[in-house]
Length: 228
Ligand SMILES: CC(C)(COP(=O)(O)OP(=O)(O)OC[C@H]1O[C@@H](n2cnc3c(N)ncnc32)[C@H](O)[C@@H]1OP(=O)(O)O)[C@@H](O)C(=O)NCCC(=O)NCCS
Image (cartoon, rainbow, N blue to C red; front, side, top):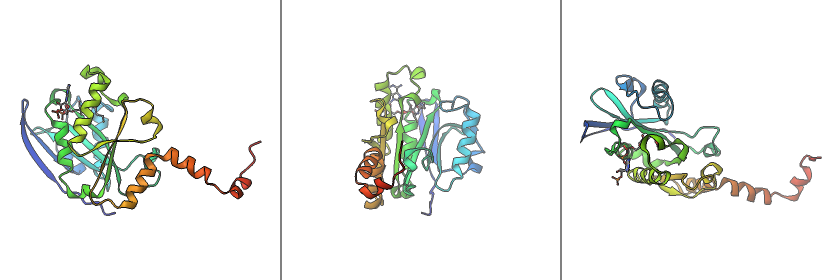
């Protein structure tokens, strides 16, 4: 797949002044801005900015930012799944992950996150992707917000819904390890039926692999190495 990226920019008023939401941006464009020192939900701000610069230059990578005149105060990332995660099992070229979204604490509750996701979807090329986001409650800022797990989960759902992502069932062991964790999915209009079927297998990979084992011909089992 040739990944094309179309830039969009929207500015709106917040109680903290005007905020511009824009992207996807290249690493060169990102380097023109400062990075808010409180963007530390995933790692120290400096390290996180370095990670964003790398993702921005991946062929499929996308960084959309929220900024004041000169300071990045929020961002969302999209990229292929980590090779160590189940979501990369079939190397699906249509499958990208909304990997991280974060807003500096003083800019939260101003619809910045919802607008980041909305602006991401303005690029028609996003219709060629299945976009997933794996939500694990241990990544949430429960301490900073003083919200309960379930109230935080509500925010996640509302925020993701603004870009058309909705909860989808899966048997991924990490996700089902806690009822507040969830898989969020958006299937673009141009995604083929074959890709959707493959994604269904991926969502239920544990079940799919067990069924495959049960269907294994008896001759294969005979050739299997003896365990004793
Ligand atoms: C989760 C996070 C990205 C939300 O950012 P945000 O810009 O404050 O979100 P929005 O303003 O777009 O709010 C989305 C919805 O949640 C609601 N909401 C946001 N913060 C809230 C709060 N503290 N209490 C109650 N509701 C809240 C908003 O009212 C909005 O609902 P609405 O659509 O009915 O108006 C932000 O809190 C954050 O950076 N957290 C740390 C990192 C993190 O947890 N990332 C997610 C995992 S990848």
